[in-house]
Length: 184
Image (cartoon, rainbow, N blue to C red; front, side, top):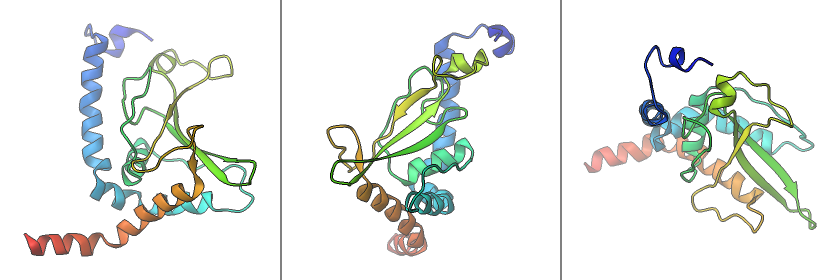
């Protein structure tokens, strides 16, 4: 909680912290989120996530990973750019969770809300317990080329198709890049 100790004895402004975190975030994006790398890195996790989403009677599933897992999954699924509030890490905050909430409409069609749940920088620094009175932050995730409904939800079919596209992209990596290398 001591700002000077957190900055290793330096007086850093919020802009300084954002610049430092921007370097780390850029490194993470290059290492885990570029399309070719993301599809490769996220492949086993994408298969497991899709399997969980398709399980009949599933009420709750919990898979644990690292921020690099989060970055590669989001990169492989072609998410739109997003901005998270009250955090220094713009893309994959410390301890972030990717959630898939499933809802059924009156006709029985399934829809999903996809979000990143995370603690604010202040909650982390102050080691605050999360509760209903002190909830975590929540950022909505949108996918390129998938239009949400009026409630901001995406159709289950669209979400599962996006997962399958990312899984299939892994299987064609060697072909696609071998052909590109031959053309060059």
